[in-house]
Image 1 (tube, rainbow, N blue to C red):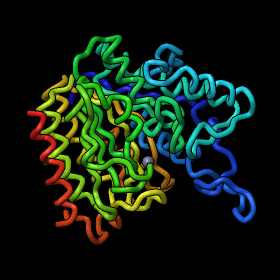
Image 2: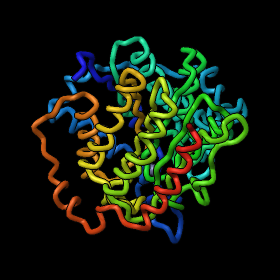
Image 3: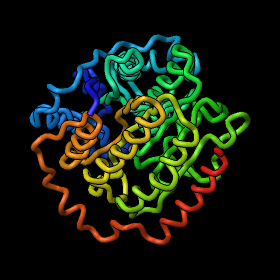
Length: 369
Ligand code: ZN
């Protein structure tokens, strides 16, 4: 275990980003009864609460978020889009794009969300912490340069990655997105850029529509530096571990990034309402361990995780705790009460039709040399 701590970003104002009275992901209105938007504060609050109750929170290094500057946001987003978000935010909110409701004041909160990652990155690069988890909101990995998408306003991971490349002069960074949905926004932010290896492991054809295929492999100078692993619905821990062992980890070893950013959606959890995968806290613990080992080998342990999706209020906090325990090297006395039932679900082992996808993705690693 490193003597340096794991950094943690949190701010109550993240929870005040208001997604409104939706019915799950749908706008309300006859015949859809108003309800709660699925991307509401509860899972995030409960995740942080379990960190506190477990005793781990006080052993993490708090990192104070700052607002990302306009210049930092404009490294990825268009001026028109930034101005649109600013105007919507000042006028009671609205829809930032495709399934992306926002409320009054969401512009400032989204700037603090992206800036939470920037502050965490700065703490990692200065050596103040060895790695960090930014439990921010709104999320970012679907946002495009000129359009909000899938609950995401600004591309947090892209903005952080560009900060690493342009402010710190890093030559190679990698992103490993394990949200159940395709990290299309992060992919788009670096699609032509060989300085970033972007990897997304997700449920095949879940969200966005028609996105995240194997053949999306980067273009121009970025050709070969985007890897998608679209696992079939129903994939369990066995498939995720195999995808890491055979694709993600070898790709990182071949590319040797100087920083690894992990858009960390926990909606691949077995009971998540927006995904059909079978991950559990033990699975996330295992994947985090694998990432940490490779990060120790290639980039002095520098891992920046940023929170993305995850909508299972009850079990999600235990997945988050497992990740933070592995990142920090501190095991609390808390046992996950959901683990036994989730681990016993049929199909947790790698299945042949899942292995086909992993084998195909392995071919893409060979191109990295
Ligand atoms: Zn997601």
